[in-house]
Amino acid sequence: MKKVFPAESKHVATNVLIDGKLSKDKKQIANAFGVYFTETVSRLHQSFSNLCNNIGNITSQCFFNRLNSGFVFKFEEVKEQFILNNLHKIDVKKAAGLDNIPPRLLEDSANVIARPLTKIINVSFEQGTVPDDFKLAKVIPVFKKGQPENINNYRPISVLSTVSKLLEKAVHEQLTKRCLQEPYL
Image (cartoon, rainbow, N blue to C red; front, side):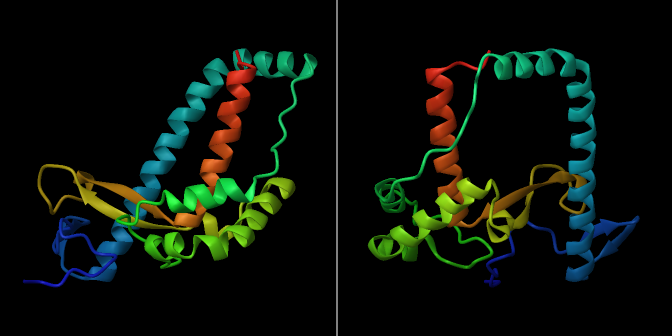
């Protein structure tokens, strides 16, 4: 049985068509996926930009109406108990992100790391920034259907670090809570 490395998928073809030629070179294949996925994101961004331009006047008006009505959103301080609870709910079967910290380790060390993680997330909220390491992900091409040699038959899956997902949960909870209290539209 062939050994599959952590960043490899058993569904990724070992031969991929690049510029009309079949390639077996892993580095060349990885670069081709990188270019393909980046171009795909650019195309999506352009189509969303076009859509937003078409509805821009409506959303701008809604935004200014909210500003004029005194609507202000500010993140609340995240409590250590929130982080601790979510560390205990981690799905330990999920893959580690680029930080290579296994979810099991985070769950097992929850009582020790909850306080510093809470501090990091609260500083992120105060400064209105996301730590650069939280923005990094392993991007794994996953085969959809068709010919495995065709790079167009793959979609990207981003594996984020578990810690960055805690920040996302805190943002999601506060935004959801606020939107339920005061609907946006």
